[in-house]
Image (tube, rainbow, N blue to C red; front, side, top):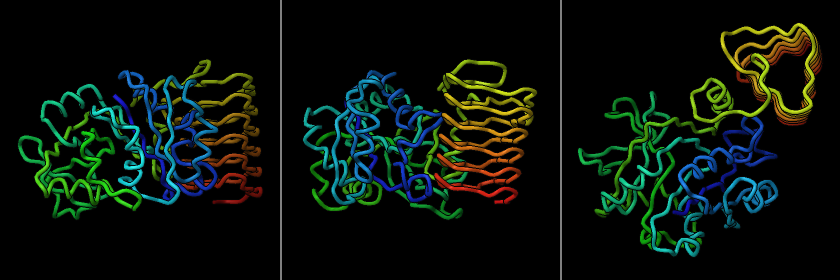
Amino acid sequence: MRAVILIGGKGTRLRPFTIDTPKPLLPVLNRPFLHYQFEILRAHGIKDVILCTGYQSAAFRRSLGSGRASGVRLRYVVEREPLGTGGALKNAELLLASGEPFLVLNGDVLNTLDIAAFLRHHKKQDASVTIALTKVKDPTLYGLVKTDLSGRIREFLEKPSWDEIEANTINAGAYIFDPSVLAQIPGGVPFSLERQLFPHLVASGSRVFAFVSAGYWIDIGTVERYRRVHLDILGGHTPFKPSGSRKGRLLMGSGVKVGKELTYGGGPGTIVLGPGTTVGDFVRFSGSVCVGPRCAIGKGAWLADCVVLEGTRVGDGARLERCVVGAGCRIGAQAALTEDAALAGGSEVRSFSLL
């Protein structure tokens, strides 16, 4: 089975971090996010992966290459102008000519989907398309999918109001396609799977079915959810295991140096320190924290449930609380970054500033 990953978007909701780096390449626990999707695919025996790129397409080739280091075979399809999810998939049509069903994934979703069960369900229903669904607490933020008792999809509601909600299952951003469906996507023009193709297929009587996934699911498309995926993995809510040498609550890469009398609070948690990072004396960690490679954390600093990317320097006594700090930042002594702060890469925060 082949997999297609749609990664052509600009990631505007995750700015400022996606200005320099495409969203699917942003580090999650110091690994590009796409590596987690590759890990899931490999676990189900899928190693032939097509990447549909657009925004900063060259960055994917530089970072991922042939895919050999990730245990997959990567092929790239590049859209010169934004074509939407449907147009991007149409671009890959020549690479999907085997006649077998293929898997499509959104490149900003982490979903521990049982792909084998997903495929069995697709074949059992003799479906044209099967859409993976997941249950969420607040479906008003997403596209709601309604099905009948057999699991056949009858209606799509985009960001419904509470009085329209009869279920809490939303589109999980994973699909299995019969290749014949590609003929219904126009070539060379913007086209949406979610807003155009799927409603058209349902209205025309095509066999479009749902598969409800019980696995972990998160869309990393906002700063808060990008931070959240780090905490979820470190909190053991996913099957993924961060790498490093364990020393108490610290999980350290090579060449890490830590000072004396570090303290910990905020209940159980893990602190990831990337290779070459240094941590000064009397630093306090709270909850779970991820610090990237070659960072420097000053004496007496406090880091709580935050993410700090590569090459950032945090001054003595600075406080970082439930925020995300981009690569190569300079945070002065006694400065404070509070909840939901998002500091663009290369930024400088002067001493005693409060953000």
